[in-house]
Structures are given as C-alpha cells and as structure tokens.
Length: 348
Image (cartoon, rainbow, N blue to C red; front, top):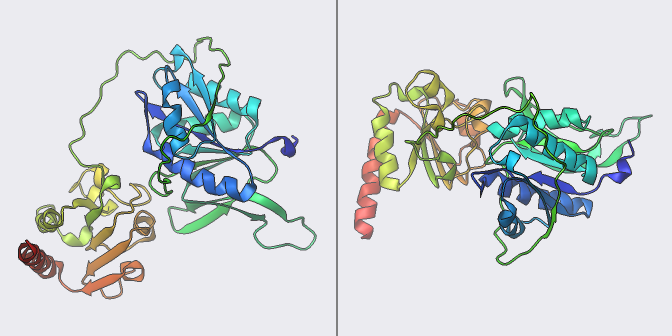
C-alpha cells in the first residue's frame, strides 16, 4: 500500500428519508479541523436515491467537495448496497481519513467497509486529533507524524485508549453523536459535486425490505436540550422524579437520567446520558443523585455549566461540577424550584 496516494478527509454524510442526519454536520465540523492540520480538503460522501439536492447543505457545513452515489437500490439503508457504495468510493478516491457517525447505520456500515478496504476501524471515538505515533518517541523506532489519533473509552469506560492506524489507509473511525461541534453554517456556500456510481447488481446478500414501521417518539431528544435536569439512583424512586420534572418545567428544561435509572426501569433508554446512552452538551446540566461514574461523565462533561446535588461529599461528580451542593436532594431541589419560580415572577 502506497500511503502517499491517500489524501483528504472524508465524511460519510448519513441521510435518512432524504434528510441529512445531524451527525453528518458534526463530523464535517471536526473534519475541517483535521483537514486544516493536514493542509488538505474535506469531502462528504452522500449515498442514497435522488439525494443530489442535499449537496448544498453539506457545503454550508464545511464540505469542499461532495461525492454523490445515487441509485434506486440505495433508497433505504441496506447493508450490502451501502457497503459496496462506500467501499467503492474509498477504493477509487483514496481518502487519508474516513469518518462515519456511530449511529445504528454507521455501526453496521463502518466495520464492513473497513474489512472490504483492508484497514482498521476505531469505534465510538470521542476525540480525534492529528499528532505523532508513537505518542512519545521510542529509541530505535521511527516516530510517524501527521497521524490520526483516535481516542475512545475502553474496558467498560474505566480507561481511555488512544489508537492509531499508521500503516494502512484510510484511517477510519466511527464517532459518537454529540461529541463534535458543527460549524456555523456558511450561507450560500457551494461545493464541487461529483457523481459516481459503481453499479449495483442485487444478489443473495441484498435484503428485501417488506415494510418500514416508524415509531413515534414520545420523549424529547435530550441531545437538543439547552437545560437538562438529570437524575440518578440517588433520586430514590420513579415517583421521586416528580421533583426533578418540576425543576425542569420552571427552567424550560428536559429531564434525563443515568444508566442505573434505566436499568431499574424508572425511565426509558432515550433519556439516558453516558457512554452507553447519549452524549449531551447543554448550557446547564443538573446532576442530581448521580455519583459521577466515568461512564456517565463521558456523556456530559462538555456541558457549559454542571451543577451537582448529592448527599455524598466525596462523590466523583463534584470533580467535574462547576457548582456543587452537598445535602438531601428531597429538600434542596424543591427549595431551588421555589426560589427560581419567585425570581422569574419578580422579573416579569
């Protein structure tokens, strides 16, 4: 493999029902940073049926070029045709870096594509940067520069691993939703659009979709919330979440929770924050009755302001909190809610 042939930072621009998923814009934001360090450009790979019209949106969020793979076989996501499409793009255009969102689609697609193009894949990354490998120079070993350093939680979130792929290309990673920042859209921006179709011949690996049943979400997406009031096992019971809901209502926020709450059946999985839940970065995050295990902190530590309320003064959550209150949440949260109500009423 001639590594010098591989150039550019590529992003799989996931779309569903001809609507680009938010993760694509997040990846483009990070791709711009990586491309700047490598003095290269950013390319979005748009796969689907009748999707060419979405290219301008990708340009507004940072794509210099958009490769469109458009075919009726790609109307709905299926593993075989999508894997064929993306691996064909990689084999033809030879990107140095290929980023895929760690969504349900991306987690299915990424490993299959990496196997087809004979490269490695680092899954569920939370940090991406350009640097040296090995990280520290080792006597007698060449230290390679301008490598993609991919960081992810490992061993159940109990440690953090930084991984490189120095001898194969592309360097591939799936990236958790919510951990990268979109850029402010550049209105009117245009990208070079190139259409590419490797040809699709259905075979016995092509799944036939008989019906698509869309569930109606009854909960707000916590990843979009500006204020989150999050509860853990320390809340005590599902009924006790009422005091958190009251606080969230006063602030115009949304209730979320830790994994322990979901495992206990108190709240649905859609509200879970953490390594095995969702990554959030609200303006204000209330961690109430949450101890602060590393798996939970990984999902909320980028919040602008973190307020912790816990009766255990030694709880790890206080290590990441901007403001901490030690005491009984059953007394503190209702008083806080009443005080905020009074402040809001006085301001009107």
